[in-house]
Length: 194
Image 1 (tube, helix red, strand yellow):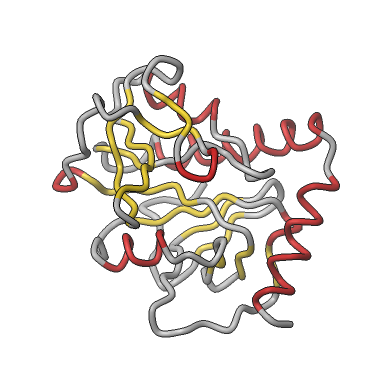
Image 2 (cartoon, one colour; image 1 turned 90 degrees about the vertical axis):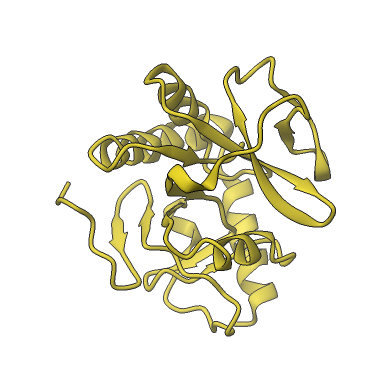
């Protein structure tokens, strides 16, 4: 299948879920992500706000803030992806690029020196860690300039396929968490089993 066909099929699968089903599966995925992340080296965590049926992150993001961990959420500026620190999930967000909520300009830019983990959205993933987004390359460009970040992809089972043809600029995930599986990818092993 072509990348466009893979994206189309995954979006159709996501949109076929009822809001209740999406919320329930998202909660399972977020709980697994929390279990993993809370047993790793502390530091700033990058995450996202769900858009177009992506795995929801409200519970995960709220939990991170309650634990006093710095939370970076994405913002598109001048055609590139940056992250700002959010301290209040209601007061610090505004409508941004493509209608996705993003941090206000008053939020500080993330200091990438204390950054170890990023929770990454996607449209399609494969078991080796390859990821397809919406085709604009924002995350691939960002991750290529921060190679040391441990990358955790969140996906529903229906978004995971056998294989994605990769290109040199594509950035792989280290771990993918779905409602039924945890895939260790790209040769990086987590600090512990879970």
